[in-house]
Length: 396
Image (cartoon, rainbow, N blue to C red; front, side, top):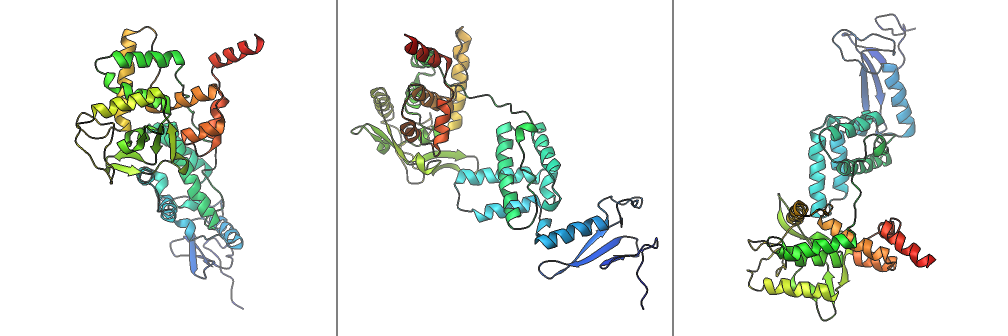
């Protein structure tokens, strides 16, 4: 009868276990695909000491327990060795047909992962605490809360794929971000009617900013997304039927320059009604651009909103311009204006109609919201002015 195998300390070794000449323990097993695999550790059991100069880790017996549990549950232990970057790349490959803006966003997240220690970690080694520490590092590096939230949502989706493929058991990114880092986002505030009037009055008279007056009017009175406004051509303005045809948006990036995309969602394709004030604004815009040189982008030409060089305006340009407009106004007025961005003008339009009890489905259509919950959220945040007016009408 053969003698049972023992380690250098005289302890009995189980089936599959052995100890190498350098003292390191080895566990040999067969994975679910029938391939021979090996696990290594400097410790047989958790209480063993690690040799000087060697990296500590789980003991061989702990690794064996995990391996056997994974095998019994059908977990692919080899697939779990892929890195977080590789998992994210795998997720992206499964949905390759996306908008250019999405591709750019994916590249940014991949660069972020490649520059962080978590990106090179095997996915089966990433724990909840690791994901939370990642969020804290992102905050320390200066990433905004919304950006971290977006990245976390993408990585959460990646791990859901890994779980579905039996690569890992748990999703380390399934946690509430605001319990780890402070949600310091400033709530988006719509302009009051009085602030809107002051903004329009100043823009119409100021020597520098009066050329942006019509764009401000259109954004405030239609609720268009800024990328939709920048992409408007002469053919999109239907004066006869009093609507703006929205079926594309103009975007730009450092890598690709200008490019045309379909709207953010399918609901973004719509006809937005024009008031008489908006019609007049478009007429002035067209009259001012009558002699502009034609610019063609992805088959589209006749853009209405151009910069001084004759190229289409962009979100970044308008955002910077509106910030400077507000700064100039507040320097010479005691009743200062709040933060103004293209999206705040869109938000103001939507809030105004919600406060006037417009049918939510109609407002959803005009705004191009894919989910009505986005629209209904505005009805749940009535302004104090609206509350006062409604109360007065009820008790009059």
